[in-house]
Amino acid sequence: MDRIGKICSYIDKCATFADVGCDHGYCAKYAIESGLCDKVYITDISAKCLAKAEKLLAKHVASGACVPVRCDGLEGLDNDIDQALIAGMGGEEIIKILKNGFIPAKFILQPMKDAPDLRAFLIERGCKILVDDIFFDGKYYFVIKGENSGGTSLYGEKELVFGRDSLKNPTVKGYAAAEAEKRRKYLLSEMREDVREKLERQYEMYRETAENDD
Image 1 (cartoon, helix red, strand yellow):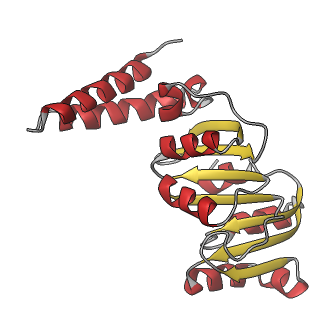
Image 2: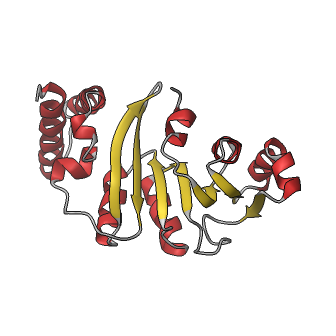
């Protein structure tokens, strides 16, 4: 399954769905044409990207089932959206979108980096994380699915780094091995002692996770 297909597999049936930072609009197309939502909102800060998605979803735009909104993140949407997808951005950018807009009732997030920061933010805000997993499609991707209520028990250090479900997924070993190798190479360079100590701790965590047979 490719990245788009894998992300779409996490979409729940709902009345209103938002594809935030939609780019080409493939996830929105999947949601509306698979009968997973009655109405889909596509948003992008880029007029060029939004135009591509509008073209892909032209018949649904014409029928009123798809509503294009040019805006930054969630800022142009009402907070009664049932479910939102934010994919293909850094974790810090996703946090900024959620802070400047709102945390949807249900969400699917696919951070390209800074996933630990995003996990910590969601837990701090009282969100319930339902899925926190990893998959591979040419590179490794984390996906976080949850709800804006219910809370999540605190994560340990490894769970923040890898995701609670990822630690039970054999795919995480490949990711951990790659990250351990990056840090091993960094450690060959000159650096401050405090930086070296931090990298050494990270290296050991990634190495142990890569070699774990549990």
